[in-house]
Amino acid sequence: MTDDRRVSGIGDPSSFATVAWEGDARSGRVVLIDQTKLPGEFVTIACGEVETVWEAIRALRVRGAPAIGVAAAYGALLGAREGLIQGDLSASRTGVLKASARLRTSRPTAVNLFWALDRIDRIAQSIPDDVSVQAFFQSLLDEARSIEAEDRAMCRAIGRHGAALVSQGQGILTHCNAGGLATADYGTALAVLFTAHEQGKGIHVYADETRPLLQGARLTAWELRNRGVPVTLICDSMAAVVMKEHKINLVIVGADRIASNGDTANKIGTYGVAVLAHAHGIPFYVAAPSSTFDLSIPDGGAIPIEERDPKEITEGFGKKTAPEGVHAYNPAFDVTPARLIAAIVTERGIVQPVNEQNIRSMLKST
Ligand code: MRU
Image (cartoon, rainbow, N blue to C red; front, top):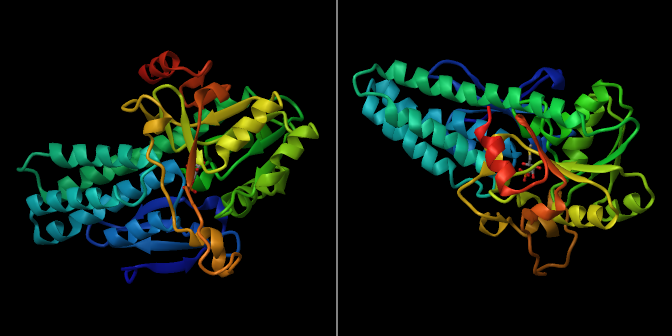
């Protein structure tokens, strides 16, 4: 399944895209940073088959809601290849739609995956039969590139809006990784922190390590250090103590899916952090692009929550840490109710208070 995957070591982490398309229609590949190797190794993989992209998303080589949307959009293009080589538009179209359907099964919670694939499907279905198969492919590639470029712009705008919520010298807690690695570039929750830092606000970030896969320790701490933002890593179970010790002035996290009423799915443990923030009178913010909102569902109860292999808990990273055969429960996400969220930072501005009316009017604005 992964036989088309080429791995290469690369140099400067700050000058490389999280996900990119490289090459022409016949031989192009989806190139992505293999995040499972960070922070020890900084390597990219080049995926030339739909199945390899599926596996990369499933195994969290590429992860974070917006980034998996971008990866899936490029991945679906690989489905066009056989038809392209045969010069057969109809086969190319069928191949793309089949690839899209397959990629939809990779992970269930982040709505950005489905949002991006819906966009690719719409283009694939709307192109007339009389265009050349090359032009068909180019339209799809343009759409995938737009998804990537729009995400970059949305992240920068989220950073600008969110930095207004941050005051001089504040201590800020974040959970999981909502940085450049989780998006096309720069991040959502971390974009707010990068921008506040660049504005000279003298912030100090506390990063939850984020059991069981340690996105906070491996990825968030790495990204913050790369950009020179002061960061202290803590175990997830220490969040209450740092709040009680008055080290935290605000909490900010990303999101995988936000329901119409503002209930927000994010990495497992986020709900607990929101409850703790509420108990300590600390504002809890979510940062997310408009592509993370799902108005088709009324509240968080309808968000599908991914359940992952219990081995991630009992023998994560190859070391057995629990007795053989013990039962473990491993939901990858939880839902924070809207009432615990002080505001949602989007690329279009800040939704506050968080309710359906404000969410709908933000999404209608441009
Ligand atoms: O399982 P992951 O690592 O894909 O989970 C990622 C998160 O929960 C992020 O916080 C979320 O996708 C927002 S990314 C901007």
